[in-house]
Length: 275
Ligand code: ADP
Image (cartoon, rainbow, N blue to C red; front, top):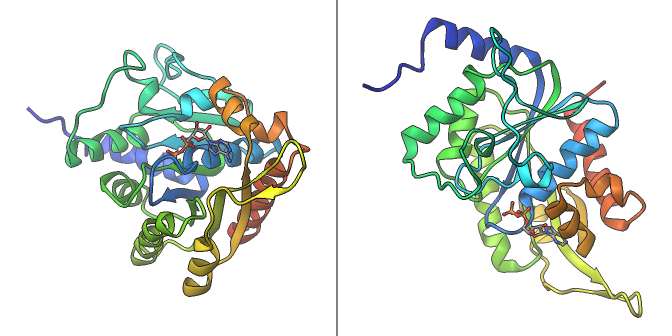
């Protein structure tokens, strides 16, 4: 028999959880591998380090990577006897929840269809007690499928979206669909983040456009949006991601970290977030 996900207790928990979250930010991309989770994690960390209370919710059910990037692989959700389970505490101000924290091992695949995915995302908000948060960052799988749609339906109101893409025109063909998706769902688009924008040559310090293209500028112009950050290709971004460390903190003086900071400031201003 299917589990009832709409008991009065569950619906009350959903209302209570939503009531404790001041602002909700969704991170979208058209394609996989463009750095969407990297952006979600660094933005969440950046806000948390600045003193905001932040949650990060990974609804990328088929490729959950935030637990690795946050260094919480293998750590289960908080589960004190007699209390509701809670998200994993990554830092005093940062709480994370991912399907990966609920699966028996990192190699377990998730084989579900749409309605089951919706059920899991519901459980994330109905059976887990979230703390008071200034901001919840929602990391979605690439594209405009079941997960972002379910997250939007369950969380009711999403305050803003950031769209992540690499510079190539072909990458932006898909990113443009996420822009239309956000517009159809009445989610204000706070800006575009162009990732892997360029590479600074370690020998001559010249900037190299590895992925040539002006997709971000063109999409920004066509949809009247801002490009809020241009993050370079940087091996330290990849290394810190693999090591579960926050690049924005460990390499705060580097251009990439400064760009993440710029994106954070733009989002804080557009969402009017206060500590
Ligand atoms: P997505 O969420 O879009 O699938 P990820 O954030 O998982 O993408 O990033 C894919 C890979 O690229 C990861 O190994 C990540 O560390 C790396 N990466 C992302 N952005 C950069 C960057 N600017 N420079 C170097 N490596 C990056």
